[in-house]
Amino acid sequence: MPLLADYVAVDLEQSVSFGEGPPVGIGATGKRLPAFRRAGLASIHQGVPESPWVRGEPVNVPPASPFASVLRAGKSRLEPVLDTASGTWVDTVPALGHRVREHGMHSMMIVPIRARRALLGVALFVRTTDPAPFHEADLLLAEELVGRAAQALDNARQYARKHTAALTLQRNLLPRRLRGGTAVEVASRYLPADVDHCVGGDWFDVFPLSGARVALVVGDVVGHGLHAAATMGRLRTAVHTLADMELPPAELLAHLDDTVQRLGEEDCDVPDQIPAVTGATCLYAVYDPATRRCTMASAGHPPPAIIDPQGRVTFPDLPTGAPLGIGVPDPFESVELELAEGSILALYTDGLIETRDHDIEEGMRRLGTALGQPGRSLEELCDTATRTLPNKGPCDDDVTLLLVRTRSLSPSRVASWTLPGEQSAVRSARNLAARQLTEWGLEGLQDAMKLIISELVTNAISHSAGQVELRLIRHQVLTCEVSDADTCAPRTRRARTTDENGRGLFLVTNLSRRWGSRSIPGGKVVWAEHDLPTHPAPDRRLSEANPPTLRSVLHRDVRHTSDTLCAADAP
Image (cartoon, rainbow, N blue to C red; front, top):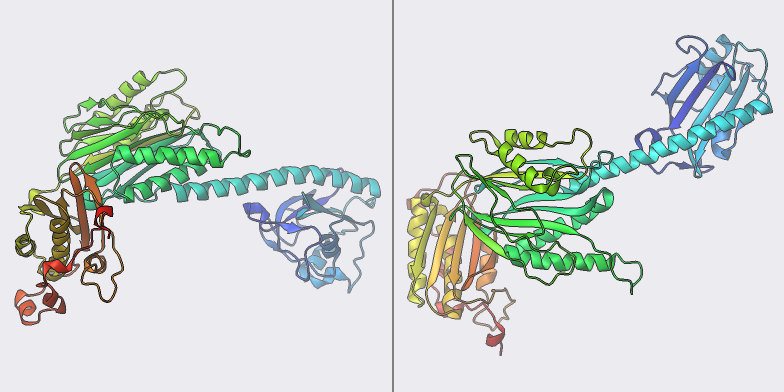
């Protein structure tokens, strides 16, 4: 412009502008022409009066026009002398015919915008004031210009598609909502080093466990970008699965280490090739608000920062452990700490404390200074900590910060009893639990909880020796826990018609929200959760006058329940 043409328009297939796809293949338009939008306009006249459509508007392509033949064939079209007589294709779109005649359009070139056998759009070149018609040399020049523009346009389209995919991946891999429950208050920050794609290899999560406990995890995969993000997503899923198995932190990291090594072996192209090291670090912690104790283990990850309510900052002496996936046989070690209510636990990745010009110790001191400000909200502390990064430009590594402020359960929300290991303890457990539920105003849950407690206590007495611990916890749900000295985890089984036993845990499954077990030093805990009522408890006199059908099965013989099966018990 204006040496080549007096008026130029560029129309793009409508999915191209947003990086959506796949685009239309050349010559694959079929009966329906693809939809186009006007993307670019230029004219020797101010305001581009020649165009019937403004930038961004849909363009109507007449089926019998030269435009349609270009789209179907994928080849350029030269019209040295444009036929504008009445009744020609220009009149199929009244606004187009009017503009063609009004501005004296007499010569035209239509060049398809192609890249990698895909039709991205068309470019229109028109002469109005210049009386000379277009020639073949003009068409060659136009095709050269459009070809170079097509490469740039295709690059932009590919970038837009990758960027959209990366953002979608990030939204699905990182937690959308952190659930601290009654145990902790949570805030977080995530700053990826790959500012183009906004994804990286860091991950963090907070999710509830049984007994009002909460799991805290932060990890870092070597590298950043889409590959690191995909690996991070696999590890995050593995952590969720292992956490659901109620594994202690050190044991969970051991299983996660095996998973990382297996993933590295699967990624090898050659079966006999030694797998490349897929480095990853992880810190996993479990906090129990009933005891205010936090158990944590590390796999090559920096230790957390602990800030007490007065603002004093400490970094616990946590065994670092080997990074995940490198094949070091050393076992992981756990550390248990008691935290004051209102303490802040800061989990982070090394991108927050380590840079090219500053060592880790200096970064940890800088982080401790930023977080040691009592009375400030977690969101304010997150902003303060991330603002202390020395680099003003793009980060060299992904930065992740997870802050949790601990809470404790009031003693009025927890009730526990020690029961003798004999059959009479089952009735005592039911009565004790019923009185506690009445104090909590949960009379409506008595019948279901009595049956659940009967089954769990009976199993504990039948398959272990010594005393049995019963604990009720009222938090977001009602949790019943039964502890015994047996280490064998219970499992449900399908009882046959003639079996006298084997239906207890089936009833627990149907009466509870969920149930499970976890190992503890010297035995195990079997737990079951029940949703709290959303409406006031019914009048107790109505309950006595209309007892539910479950009441009839509460007084069955304790010998009818035997669900915990160990290898030694198998016939």
